[in-house]
Amino acid sequence: MRLGLLARIILIVAVALFAIQLLALFVYFGAGEGRRALGEASLSLSRQVASLVMLVDEVPAGLRPTVLEAFSENGRTAAIIPGLPAGLSGTNGLIRIERSIGAALALRGVHGRQVLARLDGRSESGDTLSVYVELAAGGYLWLDVKDHVTVRLLGVPIGFFAGLFGVVVAFVALMAVAREMRPITRLAQEVDRVGGGIGPVAIPEHGAPELRTLIRAVNAMQKRIAALVRNRTLTLGAISHDLRTYLTRLRLRVEMMPESRHRAGAIADVEAMQALVEDTLDFAQDSFIPVEPAGTDLAAALRRCAAEQGDADISLDLPDGPVRVAMGDKALGRVIANLVGNALHYGKHVFATIETDGTQAVLVIEDEGPGIPVEERERVFEPFHRLEASRNRDSGGTGLGLTIVRRLVERHGGSIKLDTSPRGGLAVRVRLPRAERAG
Image 1: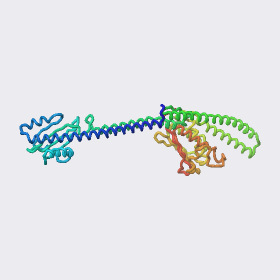
Image 2: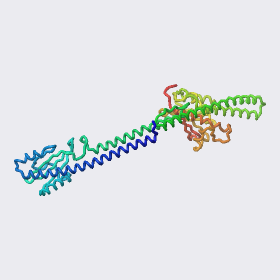
Image 3: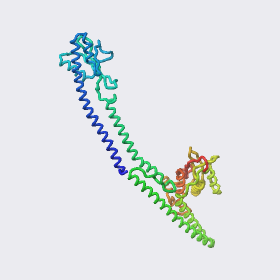
Image 4: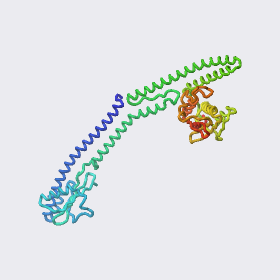
């Protein structure tokens, strides 16, 4: 708990490198000792074989079995065979041992004898060395010597255990690093969920002290942001309430004015201010409105919206059965009303269709209006952004409609995309997850 993340990673890497270096030193010095022992054993064996060959050559044939029996001990077997075994070639032998035996014979005045040495590693306790030396009277002296020519542990070369140990150390080091990094991954996943709900998301504190401090700061930041948004909403709500009162009084006074062009303009301005106040308050309160039970019929909501528009030119291409989506009735109605209203305002003629795409339903609303330039299609979702810069409500709204639509759609797991309609205007595609049953 007292070690930081950086110190933990450094310690893990240092311990792993130290273990690998220690193993390398052990193998190096162990192999050196093994080579020296092997050289001494090879020299001793060569002298014994040379002495045995000379003794077998000199003694009578009747004493040879006794001599060979005296040599056959401590894992060694000696015998006289008439010829070399089938398949035994003169290549691929242990040249070092063959030359050592030949040199030992030469020191004793014996030259020109054929010497073959082969290694058979089938023995569990070590390697079996087979030596064949040509005799003066014909035939071959065969020696079967069980010896640890290579360094082994439990019948397996020590190099295998060295490699296996290195793999295990590396695996353990990786697991330790992954364990220390797991809280960071969990923190990233939790932070990604922040902002998707009504209130702050409490992230559990795990990991190194630095991570715990970071998570604690993120939790505190969420609370401060939520409090700030709530205070903003309360402020806007209070201002909106007071503005509604004054706007209502102003509307009554304007209504009592004589009929004139100025009276109609004043009434239009009051209505515009009321709409602006309502849209702004709805935008501010949207983040804290609970999600309604999902399971609304998208087709029925679209038919209802078309009926409310009266004589508006709206063409519907809808499936016969219900298409239930994971969005509440109020939120879905607001999305459809906003998109259809925009299409009617700019395109006069609206074409609405519903497509199904596996687990999603796609609402497509097209018009014959001027459309939106490609470079502006992302900016129109920003609050108070309008393509018409005059801010005249006769040529556009408050600039909050598409912002609220996108927020509602994304809160319910959907997406919205603006494209060019084949009819020349704008095509709005809203993807919503489907609901199997009504909520």
